[in-house]
Image 1: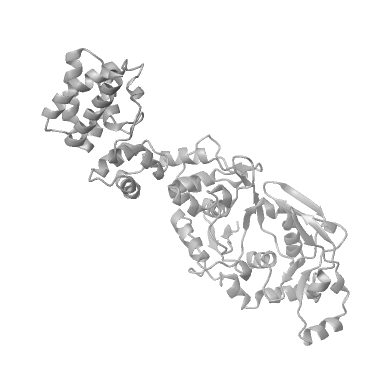
Image 2: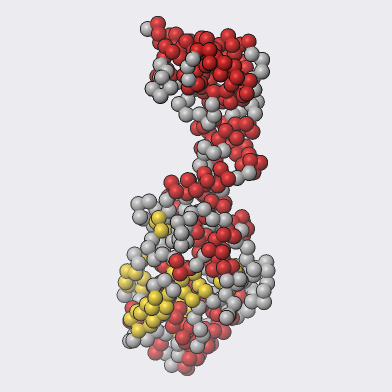
Length: 488
């Protein structure tokens, strides 16, 4: 069998979109599942869209996600250069374009902007494009040579017949046939001497021995043109795998406006890399069972591209949050604390034991920015409604809570050991003496020291972190509020 070789071939135009990361991930998994090679190739032929620093983003993202390439600009495997602008300098694209001209499969076009502006247009996938009328195909060899000798600007166009059909095969969609009349004579070499994305793609994939090409299904409409190039050269075409569209929850194409369309956006929002990779793997692919949590090594073992769906994949942010929470729960504490510490310090300025607080929230948050709403009461007791003291299940109300707080206050004032265990034993003794359930006592105390309906820990754990002085001050505040309400 031929060794599987895949490539991730991004254009350096900015942040890495979720769709691009999914393409890279699937290319990586297809290669690694079969013990093949995964290549990185930078497609920078569109110099107008080039963004400074974008190549660094690509490299950083692949490294962070663990999608290590076997070949690329920094690892020559004998198929370099791996940057298209550098490949242009070797003359490879012009060489192959001229070969097509010799075969009658391409031709020089000298039409200027004014003439091109007069051509009829069609709307294709929401974009208005000009349909070239093959005007320059009729130029004689002598006319072409004279124009070239005179230095007249030109492009080289693919020569697609007006009649007949072209068929290509996709692993998910099967055989797809289109009428040649629907295909335009696309430009292969631009007037600046650079190849177009479409042409360079085909030449590079062939000369780099790429066996499997993964891309979004928006490229299906261009694939017949690629197929005609492979046929014109007499090359074997690669295995095509066109991926389903990724949509938002409203089934609209995922856009930058969604706020979570790029890998960097998701990192900034507090998601961890492993959860992002796991989630993106399931955007269009599913395993044989209903399992949802996978490490990268497990994905390599399980990934079968034949199980990729043709239906659009919905980017469900709620599901990603849940999945991220599962990764945080499973994370070792030291790693968790290192990542959580900046968020804790942003909310808590007091000199408190942040590690104990981090341990409280570890299993309760889904993303790191959630930390603030869980721990803000440690910094300052919020204003709260005394209605919170009433709890049907705990059988507490304002009057019973007031009595508990007044009873417990002198016990807490007399106690020096404010460790969780010691505090719990003190309160437990009070519970046993009164013959009530734990919640009857713990609920009003927790309410008083936190001022919140939901907290990441129980009353005694909170008091241990707050310390004696602050805990007593908050208990007194609770008594004051309840007393004031009772006096009305």
